[in-house]
Image 1 (cartoon, rainbow, N blue to C red):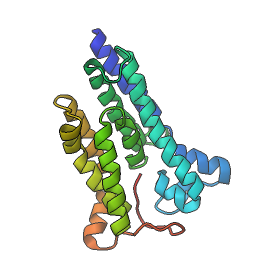
Image 2: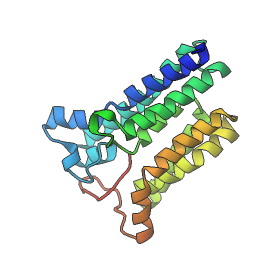
Image 3: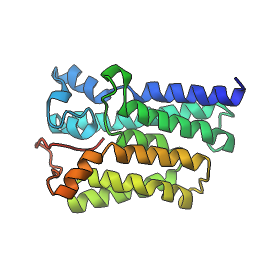
Image 4: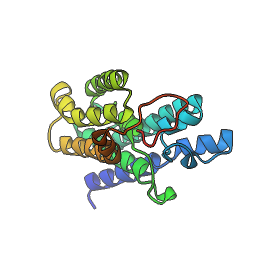
Length: 215
């Protein structure tokens, strides 16, 4: 196995293991003695946690983002140790995709995880910062106008590769991995998309327990 393949493999393993840490489940269990999967939509992500505890929801959001960021930063150190170096870009993108996979399909929870919005956001900060900033603004605007967290997540995810290409000048083959990250996040929301088209998707409001949400 050559050194480049070893680095990519290490990036993938580290990314998946970090991404698979179920912070939402752990925090609710630790502080409230409850299983967050038995409330609301049953999702382990920040939005469902926030229905039980807004403070724990915010902490889950931050920790899910941080684990994605940590995975990508560690991957950047496997090469030249410079996140801005072109040689670090591919390991970073591999780690980002692996972290999202880990959050979505954690082996510890029988591959039943969250929708990976926060983890994807954190993992992409070092890779395409301008695109991430624009994506966050887009997400906030959509959710503010519609109160559909899922719609904001889907639209932001689909727009990200275009933003990364135009604003951060990311090109292929790294862009393929970023497209894969975005596609995975969007696919994790397919049930929400069906409810949006059917007109019965729940709008976000603290204190209520909807049938589906993001993250």
